[in-house]
Length: 193
Image (cartoon, rainbow, N blue to C red):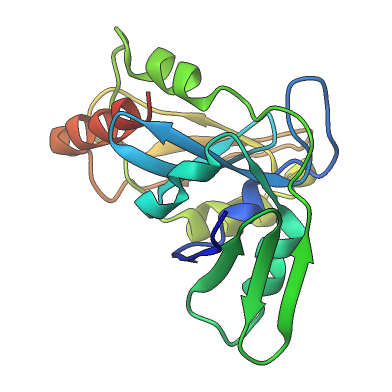
């Protein structure tokens, strides 16, 4: 098999599980194919991230790239990551050389099925807000492990933020509540299904 080198546009490996389980290939980024083309996907069982990927990855569908290979390629000073695949995965960094590893053993989470479930027959409301503000608000409320519950009102009012295992509350002002965001978001999700 010829070596295929692709540019990865986002640090998707930050959403990986670090320990394998029966349902999640540990510490890896899955190469998946959806209706909209190729994707790189990462999950830890509580969140899932998926970004479009180069069609050149198609021969590697089902393989899982180790997170440490991606992290090596994403070291500070790089704007995008170079990853080469053949019988192994290789993260390439212009200053720090290459990091090569075998693919992660085990099947990757069936993200197409999860995406299809998320896009089908549900009512969604779009609320855009600054994630940095939410992190700051969680910290200022001393939220245990940074965990908060969001109470999202109907309409465009403020979002109530309740910290986990801590007293108090916060309010987060939404940036937008655009209906076009819902259509765009569900289209993106259905392309992976």
